[in-house]
Image 1 (cartoon, helix red, strand yellow):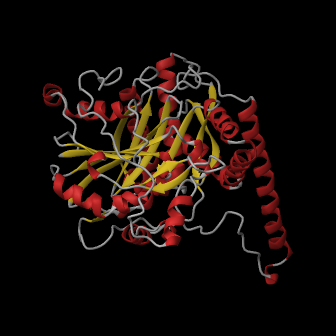
Image 2 (spheres, rainbow, N blue to C red; image 1 turned 60 degrees about the horizontal axis):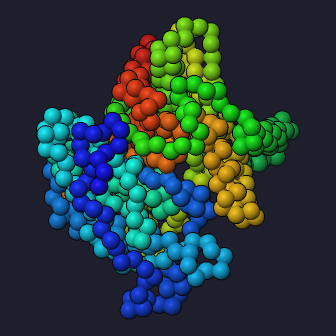
Image 3 (spheres, rainbow, N blue to C red; image 1 turned 60 degrees about the vertical axis):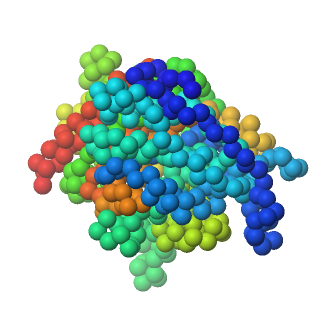
Length: 506
């Protein structure tokens, strides 16, 4: 196999060649009911999953102890490999509409567990870089589509953050980021009590759809009733404006060319995944001081970090200059699945136990690049922007538009819209919530969780992942455009400045 892509030549890619897999339709010898067989053979790939055909999710997990491969293998076989999606392949042959379906296939676990042989000298010299190089190499290597599209790569040597590292790679059609993270967490157990599932942070106070606003009682008076009606008028206006902006973005509206935006258009390059750990308590301190949400703080911190990087690297000294860059924010529209329901699905092997797959809407979220003397101004601007986006059904309508185009004009037309939406904006942004306590994966303590994605043509993707008392910021970057280490430092430095400013207000 070829050596790792540019910038990663010090560590060889896995020496074991991709194994040929005998994957086909599920054999008749498997004992299943007629209903289960029909379900396995006919379940279609979701429209979003078809659009993300070239997208892959990579989750880097730090372990607190060295790899015990037999134990990990047994755990994966007993849990993850029993999930319906993780023992299915996409098949189009034999269907009149040529739309891909999920079809069950036998799983050979040896095809999905990789223990690479890396250059010992490179590992000894800089183990952190060796892990980073190896994970980056995965973004340049294809996956064998004749077998279920998931892999576990075990790097059994210590780094500055962990005793060993696991890199999980999965095709995006298996599920969106939230679904796959929920699945991985469902395979873990509490470190304090290995007999139970991990505790998750409480959900947001608001429940139900954004448009489910209770009608005020008659006793509230005419003013409250008028305010209730007005809120729906504002919701409708914001939705129309956002959908119009979405259409304009697809047709002609582009972000300005800055050092954050690739000039190669739709050219997809290999990615480097870098991450650093931040204090969740620091983020909560800012949240409480500014009376906003954690997501508001993360959006504001991202604007602050990008602003600092831009003005330093570009040499622009105009402090009055303000640039509006836009990101694609993917919104999960599926009902959230509990960890217990996902565990039941893996135990039963039935996909109907939980609604699964990709059901994503899109929000175009502005990020403001500017220099502010007061670091908290980034949080104020972010809160105003996010509050405005909350008063809109943009995600629901963009999802519906994508499905309508796909059904009426086919996957090529929908893919063109999807591609133009991404290429006309600058970055992708996600924020995922993880366990609120330390967990173990197959008996191995988990030191950190760092998910990311590759496949989109953007030069920069920003992910946040909370876990226990920390939060990871993970950047997927095109090294040709960024000093990724400096940019990562800007994220950490921005939180420190914002925290100190917020602390002075308390």
